[in-house]
Length: 327
Image (cartoon, rainbow, N blue to C red; front, side, top):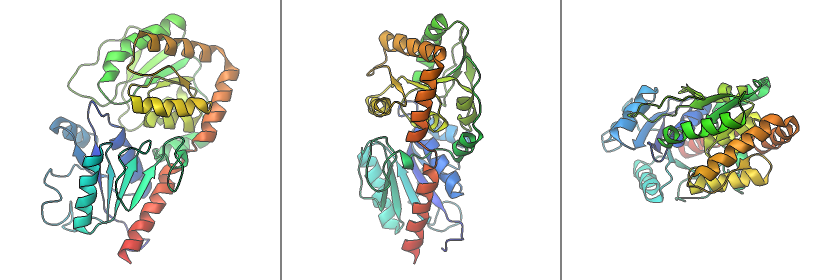
């Protein structure tokens, strides 16, 4: 291929109610920056694959790449991108790419699950080296557009966005109730996430939000956001939204601690999430809502930490990889 040609990318991702859907969303963001169709092979259940298809992802047959030819046109893809937090599964796909003679890139968090790919990307806060650090955090391209708009948040608005896993349904009621008790005038919205199969419980102090295409504008409207420690934390930082972090995994807590040390988030503690963490989160939300100076300082630190341009930086390097291998 040449630099002016479109090319085909296959994304291999882990997704589901337990591992969450951040890896899938991240690959969609990268596909948008590359201007390619996000062809995905999913390590997950049939229900997860069906959910991805309903979100508009072309999901590859479970036998790919064992079948002859490529995913859509009978040709081998130009690039494979692996985003799986478990090393043995990521490595298996690196080996498949090698057998196909296709360049392969891998996406990581916190340096975990290292594999011998052609290009490794780690946008974690605190990571150092080539294609490492928050300047390479892969966020949806729309985040940078919204950042430039400098939207004014809605006074008293709180967005709870704890990821796409099933834990959202369990935490939503407790957390929104605690926030409402401390901040009676707050308008609280909770992002539903992607998990299917369970009905979302009724919320007496908040409303559910469906945002399958992305959270950018919902985040920008929030005066304070309560997030976990995944992609949404980086999106909120890029938009300068004051963040209270409620990490639900140990890995997320490592990210939250790094952001908090840089003044870009408030860390409510180490998971598993208990009543103490929920109480501290609600206290922090109330404090931020009442203190405009604190919000401004945190917003400035967050915007300096994450600029929202990472997807394009990574996309350019991936294009270079494909072109060099094709030459």
